[in-house]
Image (cartoon, rainbow, N blue to C red; front, side, top):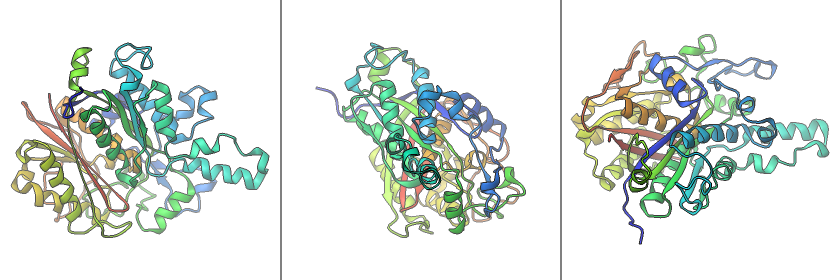
Length: 420
């Protein structure tokens, strides 16, 4: 009988982001405090009120073989590239079954997307209107399905324990990782490839978000547009890419001699039940998710030395999160180094939890908290220790870190990690 309360660890990481085409270059960009936000060029963006975005540093269609790339939405391309890196980084050399270190029926995949193949949907609708029915790609439906990235990663590694796709807006990537932890903890899998991906830099999503007054319109200074906690913040900047981790039971990792980045303690979940697209201003729902995390793990507030904040650079959302942190952590918050990495990567929507999990894992592993850039004037309501402008070393000894992700619909997901 397989134990049903197993320890879960991170053994592989992969990323493709606005800061770099892999996890190493992404981490280097975070440590350097480099912005990935750039102007959007081309006629189709010219009339938009928002003409900036955090475009991926590497075109995924140029990385993957062309016959494969043309069958995948851009979000699935990102996911596959990040998953390949994470799989190799974990020490696997082939598909499950081919690599004898993992059996297919003990391997799962949980890759999330907040919007799915929206670019495929919109582009193929243009093809239908302009060129007619016969020119619409026969791959359209598999490309636009929200589960397309997870399914294609599952095919890549021969995952047969289950392929899943949580869809909870900007909390999707973090929820995917939390779900993967439960798969391993409850004995349904030994290894799970998990994370989030998104590719939605297209005129329609940008116009829609802009008309919601959710996005920064700092078109003249793209690199300074994403500025969490600054008094002049005016909305998020859309980003694209993917972040993926390989999660594994500690026993399975030890048996094959795998390198371990950190332990995953678990997740806390809640729902605001407040508004479909606005944060609950007191942080009530976020605080509930954090308490759920503390109640369901052995994590003590005094252990937490680092937090990767959701902090999207919106006037309401940034402060609601700080209020929640203070409610739950109390005076212990004063000793938590807070990083808002969206200041550099932009907001990857359903991919944010994946990218920011990679950043949190690397912060613990390297004992270094990334900076938050673009804070010229810190909001007085931010009564917390925000890491500004340059990285900060984290303490030696056993330490823990938290990654927060929240989404439209009132979804709140809090993940916790501990050093090993």
